[in-house]
Structure formats: C-alpha cells, structure tokens
Image (cartoon, rainbow, N blue to C red; front, side, top):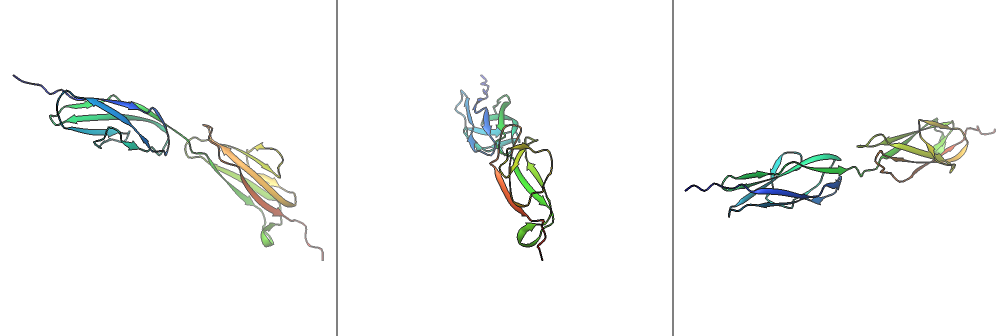
Length: 185
C-alpha cells in the first residue's frame, strides 16, 4: 500500500494596507495532516526567503502594491503556496520644500537689491506637490514660480507643500533683509 504525502495548505491572514517605513507583522497559518517538519518561506514581493516564522516582521520602504506569498514545505517534499496576496503600502512621507534667495548680498547679511525667491518642493513618491507661500503675513498664495520681493526692511517668507495624497509638511519660514538705499554722505 502506498501513502501519498499531502502538501501543507498555507494561508495569509493580513494585513491588507500598511504605512511605508513602519515595521509591521504579517500573519500566516497552514494546515497539514502529517506529522512533518515544516519549512516556512515568505515572498514580500522580492523573492522567497526562508524565515521559518508564521508571523514575520517586515518594513516596506516605498509605497505601492506588492504581491506577497507564503510557501510551506514539509520534510516529505510536499509544497503548498498561497495565491498572491496584494498588500498596499501607503505613502505617508510629506514633501520637503527648500527655499533659495537670489540677489546682491551686502554687508551683515542684508541684500542691497530686490530678492528673487524660489521654492523647490521635493516629493519622493507622489508628485506633484502643491506649494503655498506668504510673505509678511499677508495671506497664502499658490506657488506657481519664482517671485520677487522689492520692499526694503525685514521680510519673512512662510511656505509649505502638500503632496498628491494629502501628506503635508509643517510651515517653514525664512527671514531676510533688504536695504537698497545707499548711505547718505
């Protein structure tokens, strides 16, 4: 009489959605009628890795959809593999906006000319970012390109960006000074 080995039947229990760059635990299970030793492999979308754990901890660095599979192999050669399980990794990283000022710099950090302000939002995953700015506390405006400050004295430019999925950075500020009036001799 011949007894055929029955392959293990693995299942993945979740999660379905996770945040990027956050460590989380998968949950897997399997059934196998035999009294076999088992080897547990996981594929997190990058190829199978032998982990021998049903609850591995993993971190996705980039957002997107990934196909995850669990493979269980018994010591009699039976292999069970789950259907691909889609996990969605959400973009949770806000943009990072930098500012550059262009003008003629005089003594002690004062500009002696008009100052051109350029904002550059960096968004790694969900471009484009929408950027807003204001100067000297006069209402927020949508940033569409460089702008020029001509008023003499102290100027404070505030700015922030929001990416396409709604992640927003905190408001940043930059203070600079303009004095275009030559000294009286």
